[in-house]
Length: 168
Image (cartoon, rainbow, N blue to C red; front, side):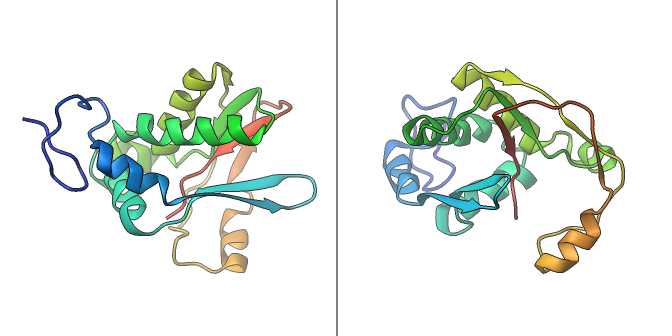
């Protein structure tokens, strides 16, 4: 018997997503596509790290919830289409190879690959992380900038690029 990862109710037809229909409606209430315009690039925030979204992200990142890539990519793809955000290629901010080896996967890569499939656009690895950084979640904006300085190498350029990062 399969159970919803959020409310633990029995699932009858959502085995691949592991979330019941009631919780899907609840998740949609956390959807807040927010635009942060930085001039030469834009940042879109799909969800804020709270409530059930916080539980799902933690499950995705720290409890081998790789099946949640599909769930998040469905919401991401829908928001991009509805807002008319131009996107020809999807990439991600890679985690360090040692951290990936410990965790067994890179959640941003999984989400980027799944989103590219759903949206029928290219997937490309455009960055390589060349240095291991401290965890960023507890650093302020300036400390993050310093920590990330020279952390990546750009290996591929493209236009209309969506880069996926899972923060927190």
